[in-house]
Length: 127
Image (tube, rainbow, N blue to C red; front, top):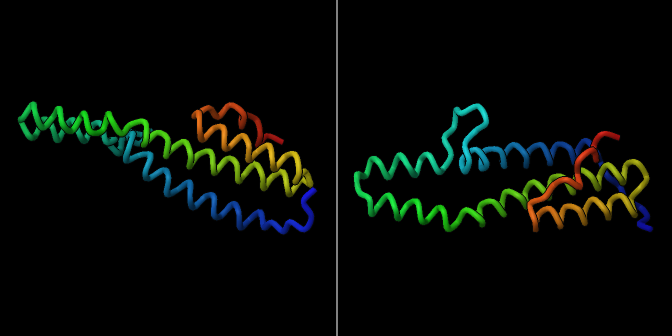
């Protein structure tokens, strides 16, 4: 059992909100905003390819981003998993479940960062 944890939930929440805000900016840049006010990189690449009026440039731009899509998705998944893992572990520690709950939250975060499946976090924050 871990003894002596001193967690400031408000401080953790402030940091997580800051990271979430900054990651939203990145997510919007990559995929576009939900409200459509920000075009994602795919739309921007398409516009640039059209503006270049060159099939070679268009194909090169599209190929570049297609090849990096898995990496970009992986980055987004790791950020999201880190946020969920930190929030879940903090919640577990505050509730006195620092051994099993915090370890489970962290294990779930590692798994989600690897496979992009976040279903282990469903309902975690409904307690």
